[in-house]
Length: 410
Image (tube, rainbow, N blue to C red; front, side, top):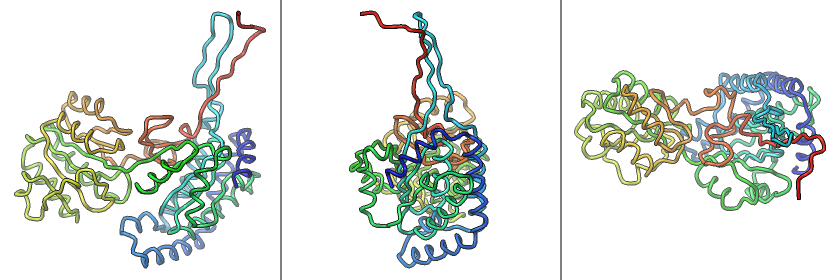
C-alpha cells in the first residue's frame, strides 16, 4: 500500500486543480448515489458497537443519518471549491548578488491517518489530502469498519471517474491492531502520520512512530466568565459550548467563573446547564447554589468527559483563569466571555492554546467553521501546523532559486 501510495503521490503532485476538484465533486455524487448502502453499513456498525457497550458519546460519533451523510457529500464539494494550496507563493526576495528566491507550497507526500469512531473522517481526509496533492492511507477503527468501507468505495469510484488512481486514497482492509504498528514504522513510504482519537491512541502513536506525527491531543476546553461578562452572552455561550454536541473535541469540559461575577448570573448559567441534562461537578463555594450540584474531585479539572458532564470553579479574575488553564488545559480551545476588552485581550494573548475565542462558543473549533471546508484534525502541538489542519496544513514548502550564472566566492 505504501509503495502504491508513493506512486500516486508523485502523480497527484502534478495534477492540476480542475482535475482534483472534478474528482471530489464526482466522489460527492457517488456518496449520494450509494446513500442506502452506506447507511445500511452504518446500522450494522451501530448495532455491533451498542452490543459491545460503547458509550453514548462514542455512538454519537459513529452514527450516520441522512443529514450527516448529506453533510459529508457537501463537505467533499466544499473542499473542491477551495483555493488549491499547491504552488502558492508564500515568500519572495532577491539578494544583492541577483539570486531570486521563491518559496512555494508543495504536498507532504503520503499521509497516514489513524482514527477512531467517526466515519466522516474517511471522506474528509480523502478530500483534504487529494486537494493538497497528497496520497493517503486510512486506518479507521474496528467499530466503524463497514461504514468506512462503504464510504471509501464511493469516494474512490468518484476519483476513478475523473481519471485519478484509486491508490491515491487507500483504506487499510484489516482491523488488526498490527496494521497500526506497520503504518507507524513505514519510514520511507509514509511521510507523516496523523492520529485522530482518544488519549491512548495518540499516546501509542507518539511512542511507537518512526515517522513524523502531527498530533491531536485531548480537548480539555474551558469557558471563562469575566466579571464584565454580559449575562445573556454568558448563558448562550456556556450552554452551546457544552451541550450542542458533548462528544466532540471542542466541547467545553470546564467552566471558570470570576469570583466577583454576580451570583444571579452564575445561578442562571448553572441552572441552564442542569436543566439541559448536564451533570455539574463544582468547587465547594458553589454547592449551595442548586441542590442538583455535586462536589468536584481533583481529577475533574483535567478530564475530557466527552459527555454531559462539566466541572465548574471560581477563579480570582482573568489572571486566575489563565493560571488554571495553564495547569489543567490541553492547549486545544479556550474561550472568554467579557465586555472588558483589556481582559479579553489579556486572555487571548496569554492563554497558550491552539484556538482562543472571545464571546463565542468553543464548538467553533472546527475546520468547516474556520472556512477550511473540512479538517484532518486539530493539532495542539507547536510544530508545522496548529489548530484545525486544512489544506495549507497538509503542505510544506520548497525554495526555488533562480540565477544567471552566479557562483559562490571561495
